[in-house]
Amino acid sequence: MQIYNDLTRQKEDFIPLEPGKAKIYACGPTVYNYFHIGNARCFVIFDMFRRYLEYRGYDVTFVQNFTDVDDKMIKKANEEGVTVADIAERYIKEYYTDAEGLGIRKATVHPRATENIGQIIGLVSKLVKTGHAYAVENGDVYFRTRSFDHYGCLSHMPIEDLESGARIAVDEIKEDPLDFALWKGAKPGEPSWPSPWGQGRPGWHIECSAMVKRYLGDTIDIHCGGVDLTFPHHENEIAQSEAATGKKFANYWMHNGFINVDNQKMSKSLNNFFTVRDVAEKYGYPAIRYFLLSSHYRKPINYSVDIIEASKNAVERIQNCADNLAFYLRNAKDGEELSSEKRAVFEGYKNAFIEKMDDDFNTADAVTALFEIVRELNSLIADGASKQAVKEAGDVFLELGNLMGFIGEIKVDKELSDRIEAMIEERAKAKKEKNYARADEIRNELTSMGVTLMDTPLGTKWKIE
Image (cartoon, rainbow, N blue to C red):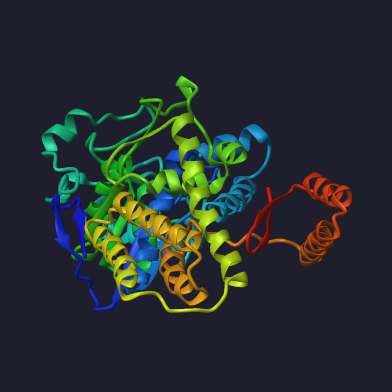
């Protein structure tokens, strides 16, 4: 397996620190609102990456944090007259709702910044002790950026260029414009914790370094996130972590590309800023997941109404294939096994899927291979192949479709399901007795319940819209 490493700017063989295991840290959301489709790309992409590593046999420890105290959260809490903790609890809950809808599995650990204050203070203290950081009179603590010789190694920019874009805010007291806050002295109306430098709260960058060290160790296999985090967030993580431990922080860095909306950068000022919740209400969560995986993760991706509608249609084709497969296997007759020629076709597409995913996690081409499997499977079903043959081919389809997170179980209340089956049976009996008025009456009643019927040679299929 090869992945593109932003640290070296080239594809590299993935060689984990410990054979058969992978330690991954993914930057999670700041929980002050519903997350938008730009955030969702990062969450879905690296959920899929984790799934694939596990599929390939790796034991994955996947850590994704929640930033549960920062300036935006404090501002929102003050506006609403509630605590920052109230805001965090509300939007962590909403995160899980949207994440579940998108098929994103929970991380091995979802640490919060406020649960790691001790670790953060310990890391800052070590940096101060070794001269890599310094405290100022207002209680802030800053990292001495020039004390780390490799600063700029991830963004691949000389320190002179980075310096030209650095600024000192009005309320900052620091030695150098490039220095960044590790700890912020307390201000009125803000949550704070006791520290050697007085009451205060952690800076944004330091929380990730502290949580990586606590839950994964000094050095990890992969650190990932959106490309917008490359500088300064991930650059600063490297500097403070390696200055503290003297060890390499992460061996591989993976960043997903931006999302544009109608070929323009997504922003609130352009009124083209969409939350996942908004999009899911119109098109469903599976369409969003498909959209986000249908392009290579490192490339920019464009969102538009036409594209998300096409994604909805595409994922429905996959889900319809799964429904057809389940129905066919319940009703088809036994017969010959899948021919060696057809078996080679399905195995060939499966191998193509794996080959593309092993090549820098190319989900776009992997999806193409999955659709070839869908086409071949639909042909087998249409040709009336035996139950054994369809099951063998269907197992390949289900294996990869479930891996991609496109085939979700539709949960139907058993009492409702039994009622629908009984009505379908009564309708079939009425048709057999040529009581077509009653058959139509039952069909209309089912339609009013949101049930769609499809009469097939093998019987009547149904689904709830």
